[in-house]
Length: 182
Image (cartoon, rainbow, N blue to C red):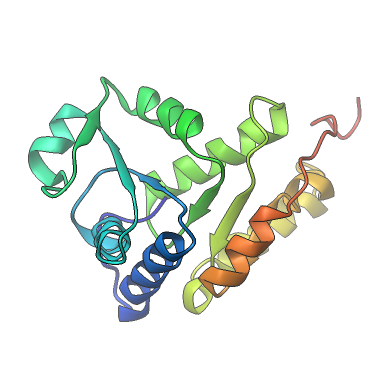
């Protein structure tokens, strides 16, 4: 999960490339949104350059505009189907900086964990503190008793790809009722 734009800070593109390379070196297949632009393109290109396997899942309208030209892309009918395919193919989720689409995918992955639809670990690569305001908000939601501590803790955060991947590999599933006052 990452932006289709480069963002203002060059560190975002560099982090996407480092993550792609790191995943490829560990022989972890990249499953992503199929774009050749922005952080998505940097992630895929770096993984490919390092000899990694990359699967792009994309809708037909996006494939024609931004689809990665060096990949065989799996086209799905809708964004909802795209997220279902991510869940079917991925063992874990990692979010890099991005906008609404990235946040949508991040929160859906967390919600599906919370509801027991899947038990896939979810992480944030917090490049140059990009997600610090979001993490503060999640602590606020916890303080206001809209999110359980256990569910907020499902989100693994690191500033470096390797340690984040390591932490996701040992993140236990959370099986706690979503409601604070059942």
